Image (cartoon, rainbow, N blue to C red; front, side, top):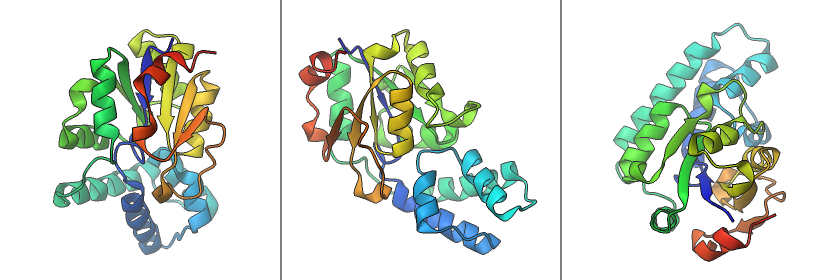
Length: 220
């Protein structure tokens, strides 16, 4: 039986990809390192360190990756602080609450930096639902490697095969499957052209996720 659900954050809890897209494209354009839409789509689900490292390698540039990531992170945080009308993706807060009430352990595993995660969880009032929060920025390898989800399962003290991941990106779905976990792929049209076909189930709305189905229908 499934004992835990691990949520991605960007594109699953907050519809942040349009925000990231606008900020990132403008940021890299101003630096003189423009990125195509196709390249950006491949970045979704990766850490900012990995993304800016790929940009650096593409242009054989000599900029300091950590410095640029810090500058970009500050712009994103400033945006979230200014935009007071940002809300959770429809239905996800209710799903999180219902899973919690049904004694299913919850974890959040996001490629975003810790300060981004903390701000979103605090803004939406959902921090206390999660037993553990893992930032991919604090790990050596990011999605599609399974490290972030295995770390979340270890923190929950639950075996990977007893966990199910909710993801919206190709990198995230692959990371979940590489971790030996079941995966629900959430189709978010704002997340770009993501291949989430390897997910065990694909949904268009969180209202499609049933608690009993999670508990009993995802056993291997």
